[in-house]
Amino acid sequence: MASSACWWCLSHTSPQHTLRGVTTRYRLPIHVSTVTFSTTSSAQLPLPPKKSTGPKVVPKKGTKTLIIGKSKRAPENRSRRPAPGERKALRKRIVLSNVNALEVPSMQDINEENMYDQGLEGQVLGLPGPIVDQLRAVEAFKPTQGWGMFRRPGTLMRRETLGLGKLIAEMSSGGRPHKTVRRILVGERGSGKSMMLLQALTMAMLRGWTVINLPEAQDITIGHTPYTPLPSSSPTQYIQPAYLSRLLRQISTANPHLSDLQLSQPPSQSTVPIPIPPNISLARLASLGASDPDIAYQIFDLLIKEILAPGRPPVFLGLDGLAHAMQPGTGYTAPNMKPIHPHDLVILNWYLSFLSWKADLPNGGIIMAATSQSNAPRVPALDVALSQLEGDYTTRAGQVVPKKERIPLMRYDERVLQVLKGNKGKIDVQRLEGLSKEEARGLLEYWAKSGMVRERVSEGFVGEKWAVSGGGVVGELERAVVRMRV
Image 1 (cartoon, rainbow, N blue to C red):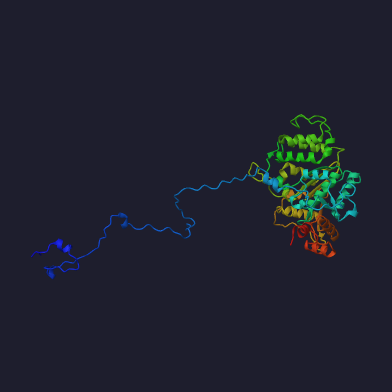
Image 2: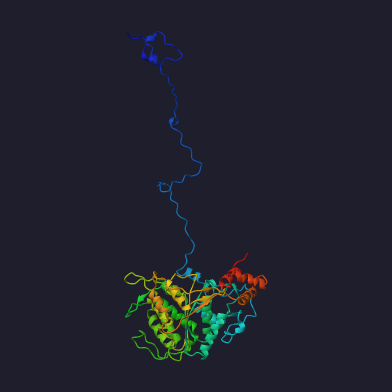
């Protein structure tokens, strides 16, 4: 039987009232929901999320993130970039004078007469102005030698310096005519090997010798200059035109007496590709090779023949950093992609031919090389060869150091051993050690007069600094007294 109540009445009946006329049997369940009426549609949308005020979450390393937004340009660098070679020039800049340092009025200059005076042992002598210009031309000054702390350049006359000055004076005056001395300076770091080479260059210039100096063997072997094979050379030799051109300029500047020496005989056209005037001076000849690297090797070969001609002045050949000239390879590569041996470079082969007695100086002179302990590759063949030449030596402390012997299972460069073998003569090995206390006192007094030492130079002060510097090692003494301030 159908109900008398319609569905419209059932759906619109208030829940507070009870349906009348409808029995409980036909009563339907009533679901009531309250509907909020609004004319705004956004009222039913979820609220937007709040902006985060905490720290920004950085994505993990290795994850890719998509950034959509305005790209930010990197800040423009408005600083001036250094020009080519500017950093190297700044690194090798030499300052030889400090106007803020005190002047030492009692300091006398070194000259050709007092460079072997035994009464000047332990004193500091100044370098004359023209000699300073010549030493700067051959790059004898090092940036680490502390020249910029004093009013003018000066050098300590130690016992080894006076002995070398006496030798140069005897060779210049005819006491040892046409004698050639070959010497290698060894010693620990900071013992004054480069300074001894500078002193030898100074005394040779004072005596009017022809000076040729290779300031750093590393600059020749590091592979920073152009090189080319030398035609008709067996085994193949390699020339470095740019380096030879710079070396010719140094020779022309450091030897003023070459302006008074003329070419003995004009070369043939096959020897030098350009016409050479018959009465040209040797200084002008060196300038021709310095201005044109393409003919630098031919000019250098001709200039060396003229310098070694009979009647010319004695010659001083210097080299610093001998280990770089003895290492197994260089920064240059041969056509077979193997590193070129340093002895295959023409300039080093030329120098080592004089050091090894293959070539001689007809007018006499000195061939001097200095080793380095601060910047040197490890060359076992060089260490063994120098130890064999020096033999057993005794330190100032009385300790006997035996010479090194070859290790049977270690490979040695035979070319290095052959150079230092000295078949026709002897190669002197001079070991530089620390200063004596008298020499250290003279150096400390000079520093005090220059304003670099504020304490009173007494016996106790000298003994303390001498002991702290490892027995008077010059580099350590300068570090302990001048460079280190408490």
